[in-house]
Image 1 (cartoon, rainbow, N blue to C red):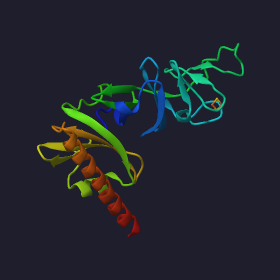
Image 2: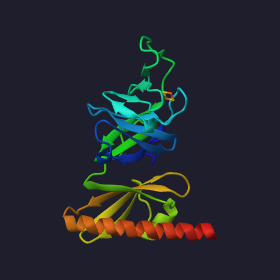
Image 3: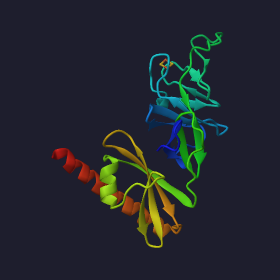
Image 4: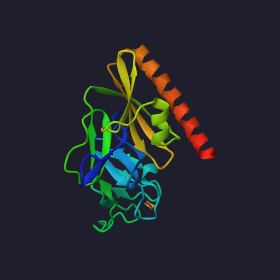
Length: 217
Ligand code: FES
């Protein structure tokens, strides 16, 4: 989702899916990342590749304010520099050992990761309440067709339901796979939230069916 010309923001995950002390895999246009939150609550987005032997850092673990690789235990700071190499406990790791990091911000219950250095902050999705994220094996076009609506300038497909709306914040994960963050507008009662969940599941199946048919043609 592009918001300016010098950088772009991707809605990588919902805040609720990244508690303190955890790491999860995510994808942005620049590639795969390890999205992690330290024990004090600081968020970081690191390239999902350990500089040592290439293990995915999203398979690692958070210890205090550092992310540790599951393979040989090298630890990295939120800024990307290597802090510790367990096989050489007396060594101060050289500055050259570092993992690429990305700017990350949290807004409205969504975790946004930037490509490059954005001039503006991530979009503010006022009045929307995050519900859940799910992955559809379908591209944006198939999701729009299933929803009967186009993506708006904020990167969302909005579907009216009852007195409110389901807003699908879309994050492409390649040609035929999309991460969908479901946000609700004007729907707070448990029954309405259940109805929104059911509608979203139905829409996902419809989008995936369309994608399969398109692939088969
Ligand atoms: S591959 Fe990560 S510490 Fe060795």
